[in-house]
Length: 205
Image (cartoon, rainbow, N blue to C red; front, side, top):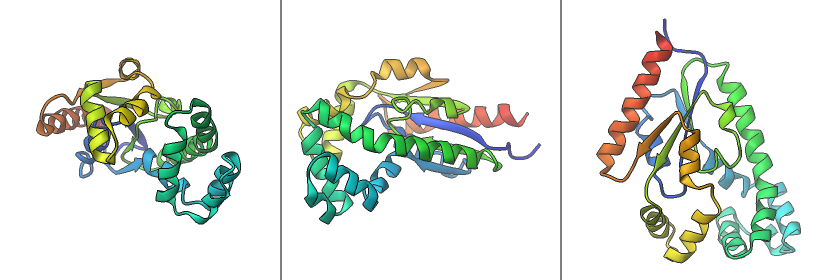
């Protein structure tokens, strides 16, 4: 039958759950991987986004910073301020949703199985754009520890990031399949490969 036309798989979880690692294991199996998190980072390098954030937060110095420096400053601003966090989301989230919609429309015209990975798939309610949703889950403590080590921040600050995301159990209820990342990485790899190959077999029959 050949490659299926435009089948979209989402891989998500909360920060530190391992969804990015799981997606990378499919790099040689799928037609391509799109990172929602990377889109968010790239937006912070766009001058029109930077200007809007500078105005929204009354921080004109943002206009003279690079994307990484702005991300660092934004983390400080929104960490303990829910109103500031909402302002940040109001600037970034509509643009991320718009990108996801355009991405889905484009990929559906192409043959193959495509992956969209990112922690905010469910929060942005773009899971409806997908044909299949995989949620990678692990314990809150282990995930927060990973984020703290990865981003060189305190456990307490990493925990605050976790708290603003949807509970992982809610995401798992939305999933077509759930992957348990509480064991070794090889176990994560085998789970995600098994799910992907089952999907491929089913849609090509």
